[in-house]
Length: 395
Image (cartoon, rainbow, N blue to C red; front, side, top):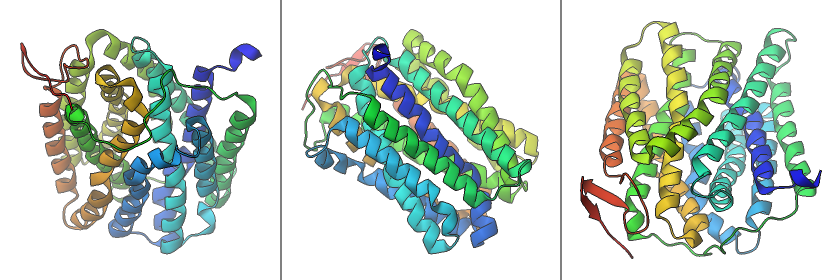
């Protein structure tokens, strides 16, 4: 059994724990908020904006790491996320849902920040795309289990959403407790900086993650909401749709990781953003629910290509910057996320199509940025303005 006490096994197990709680929370959210708290686009936009505040404050993880180790913080974050999910169903009011959402989000975002740092420290540059693809696949498999259970409990056993929230949250907490007691503490190869700093030569990475955060909000907040409000999907319908996402990611995420290793970050990001422009434009005019579901599934698959952002940064970064830059990047990623859901909630009332058309515009900006990623990024070769012309910008 000693052979299983490895850093990669720990990361794989924690990767499985996250979607159990978050998948239950996400798959029930739209129906629970509409049926139990009479939410409209305005309230769901506010809730999602509040959910992103802990992500915006992720830079503070550097200060937390002054008193707690990264691995310990990852486990504690899982416990907090599980608790926030478990108690969600007991607060079916506007304020109650806002509060439980923020609690869940604190755990989720701090875990994701630390997970990115640990992954880049534990995985070599050569193996990182492939192993990160495996992490996505494991998370998808766990999501698959979670969404299957949600559907079975709702449709066959008629279990209440309150009880399902408890099951999902407690399961994640139990996995976190197991990780706490079973695994030894693993040290990264290089001691991480414990202060916040923005580095000039990382500017393109910062820009990519900022635009990625804006794009993610449109998908997370309004794509699912479109299914419920426009097409009348039930909670079990949403769970089945997530189920399909999980099945496909199990097979495609590792392949995407291998693709990144083969064709590089630049080409992968270009493929992702061209696809997003097409998908968001189609969201704006779709009237057939089956086509909408197909768009949603393809959109979700493209998320795995965001691994290329992380491996691009790994290739250009000072190894001592991984932890603090992960926190800074999450804050940048969520800068737009705090404002956009609430603003788009208001825009949604007058024109849902405009929400998705502006998303297509954001994907266009990301595409321009992706074309600046070098074919072979490394320290000193962070940005390529044109073929044969590379910016060397050190701070």
